[in-house]
Length: 469
Image (cartoon, rainbow, N blue to C red):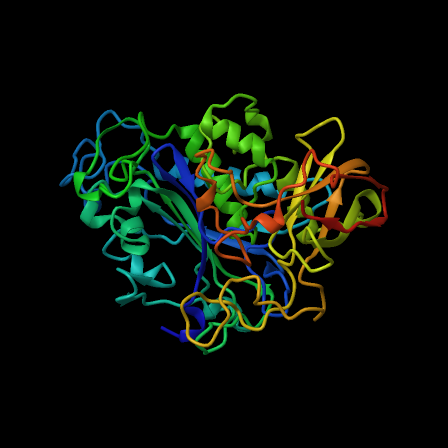
């Protein structure tokens, strides 16, 4: 397998007990950027190709009858079954949700079927990457997607993991043992990369992505796997959520993963609303949870794209009239005591009178870096605040929220701490900084004197710097 296409950038919705944990998550931005700060986005048609097997059903190659437990995994009885026709339609509908947004333009095409029921025995021929902790490479690369020869095959696989036998789980093989209990689905983008230790992204043009959708926890789920429990935590990591996942929740998850497939990453936006929903403290408004939230919120409707989802997508895939009918607010996030950049703060714009119309951007997420920032690779600065080449071309605290509806907005900053509320927010990792910013010098400004009101006019960009609290 070619080295330049080995380091894949993945995103997923995953649950741990009742809360989903996020990985490699940026708030309100692109899934990944080049070291120069360029978002990695599709150029030209987005062609996806689904396999020919089910998401959940009787697949003898992966465990036989769906009622079997197969050695202590998710033992399922009277399960929801999703055959290939229904599975492909779920994916088709998910892409259509992103393909029909106002102020956005993208060419999404359903390609020919992969023609194979992808399972544990042949997945290495359809998934670009590695398996079992990196010990087993796949047999394919994404090189053909960037080849000038139109006859070179490009996979762009959409894979359905219908296995109910733990030892044959595609999700476990790629993400690690017991991952089937914590990951509903995941997507990976496959940009062009250099043959170096960082896997440096060499072009912002994206022509290949891939996705896996699991049926392991579709309801009802009755038997957890004690081999997956972690005694160091209070979470039951060896079990699907109580009662299992509904078909609507699976459909919403696929809409979320298609967002990743198209180059978007996670978002938080309405932080306090998320905390209220997770802790049951009151004030939870499920309609204000965006589709690209990186942490599971029971009851949230991910099937319908929300304001932040739409604003972010149109920013990266603008329609011809985008600049004239929308507005923008941009500037820098600064720390609480000086003019130093507050890189990694989430900058939030909330339209006055309607908290559902809230969009965000992580300060400094598109600033130039010294290195790509791959964690644990010698000689790099990692995903830290310090891995920023200030002023080349943008300041380390720079933000730009484009694609907003014209009107009056309240602007504020927020970090990724829930101040001990127990919402699981501490698991929210973001691009470009890991761990997330929770330093006291970068405090939230919502509801404080440092909250700012801004007028955003159609066709115009309003400059506005913001200080942390």
